[in-house]
Length: 92
Image (cartoon, rainbow, N blue to C red; front, side):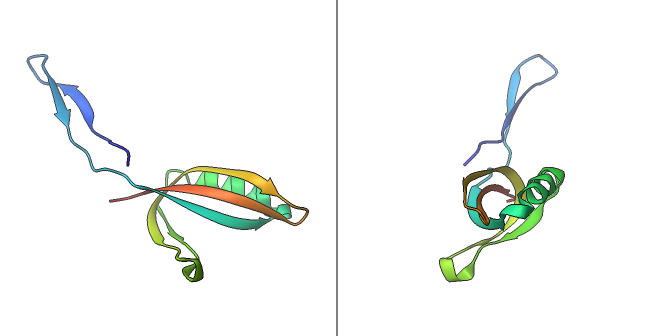
């Protein structure tokens, strides 16, 4: 979980901690056809600041998450498939 609290100074110069919601990170593994990997990467960068609904595969215990895509990568590939690992910061 990420702590999103901030530290601010009050009118007398003393620090005050402003508590924020905590964010849970959810990871997804997605199969992407190799010919589409550039499109998918560009799309994820484009929507990085837009909260989206991410739906996992129910047959594999996948979760539905409302949040921001935070990190992704293509660490595994074959001729026809790239494995995309997507990390989503859940909105609480």
